[in-house]
Length: 102
Image (cartoon, rainbow, N blue to C red):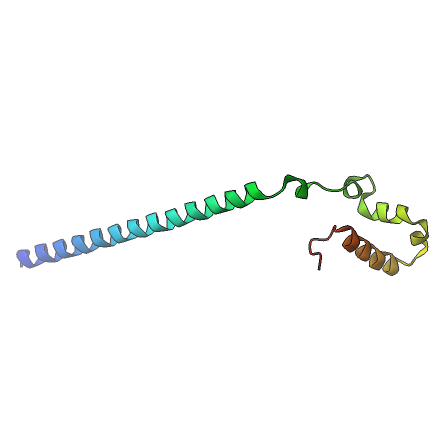
């Protein structure tokens, strides 16, 4: 009976060791993929132009971009709020200030 228990323990220990080795291999594989993705991302960041991230004067002015929009054409102040914001959205699109320029 003791011999049967010893064999069972050896089989279980060897199965555990095998699973640990398999888990380690998977961890190293995932780690290498993460490093590869990080290097690709760092290459893409270094390729981007530094001038793209700088905000325009209208965006950094005291009144903000909306105030600059209103100051360009004083007649815009007489429009209703809905018309102002509609024209403002169009103005931002023309100036390339939108996230999506579609």
